[in-house]
Amino acid sequence: MSTEPQTWPFDSPPNVACFTVRSIVDGVKPVLMASRDADDGAWQFLTGDAFNKTEAMLVSLKSMVARDSTLLQLADLQPGWMAWRERPDAPWSRQAEAQQTEG
Image (cartoon, rainbow, N blue to C red; front, top):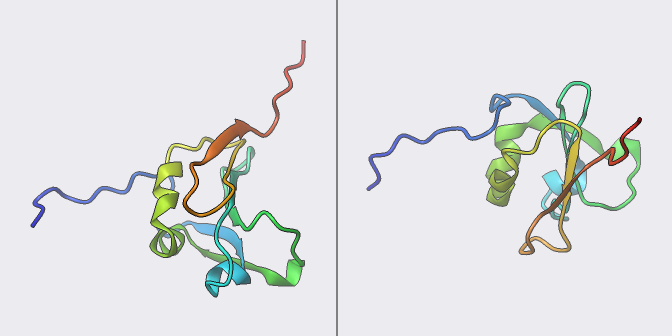
């Protein structure tokens, strides 16, 4: 039995609202893309497929982690960044959403 306290690794609280789609919530499709909005740091967990806005849902960050513990690997994802993977057991790739610098 572990005596270490369980710490929340995200800089967002467990109950923060996240955008996702019904097919992920229903367990039909996996999370293959995640992003954080640059302006407010809001989380989005998506399938990587096109979706109808009627499929959009708001759920807690904690509930998304409960559905897919590999999302813990994205706890350090900064606002303005995105991550994606080919399949649920593949490693995450990351990049800033705006890779261009203005000079």
